[in-house]
Image 1 (tube, rainbow over the protein chains, first blue to last red):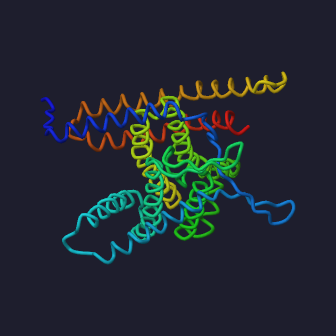
Image 2 (cartoon, one colour; image 1 turned 180 degrees about the vertical axis):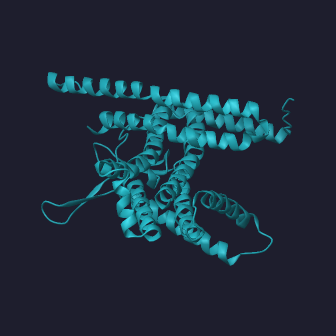
Image 3 (cartoon, each protein chain N blue to C red; image 1 turned 90 degrees about the horizontal axis):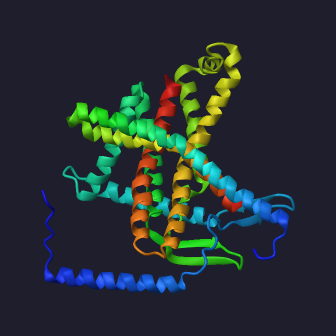
Length: 279
Length: 84
């Protein structure tokens, strides 16, 4: 089986012009892309409450999180408005994603009445994280601090994804931990939940507590490492090749492929942690 | 970087060495793990080719979980390089 490309003359001319522009821009980049600055640095502003206490805040995380939330809300409103029995393309897409997650939740949660709440939590986490990860695969506006001050780079780097900030991930991971214990108390009752820390014998109590506290750490660091590490790797590699060819491929790989898989892993681990507490 | 006294130079060298060692040794474990996952997934696909779709999905998920130990060392390397 061979792949046959049927290109018309118009397409061929388009590709040739595109390649010429690409190479010219690359050569110009080679002259003008200067020293790489602010790798791994974040734009942080400090808000002083009193003399000793300062809040350190990453404004990009806040802006991008709100933008994604607004986007999700608008698409939810659009989804609700256009509900049909014969689905449109938009509706079918969302139904496919959500039913995929619903089946995973149904398989792993033993109690019927808890399937829906757990599904809401994991689907919300998945939608938010997958959109913010995919944003990390598209070129956009990025703000980095340098020695002279703040540098705004337009379309040289990708958008800042909120999951590249450890605070976002840690919030969700701690939220999942608290929710899993809340579900456990609701299902088992307080005393049976309390006793589960002293199993198989009371000597294991510190081990059980440490095991529970280690969950959010690994849960949040996995996502953070993938997204933040991938972003820095792409930046350094595309700087070394002066933005010829490689960024498109790497942005696609780290943004779309790794991003979707990590979002799926995050929400599946949330389901697994909750179901482990319920049993 | 031109006028740097000896102490700073040693600290700088130690940073780079530490980052390289952390990443180099940290990559061994995930590599072995992912190799195992890939090998057993290939075994399973060879036995039941009709299941290959769901096996590949689960293989990718398991690989993403296995990768995380390597990512911890990547984080430590980045912290050494850019933050400390």
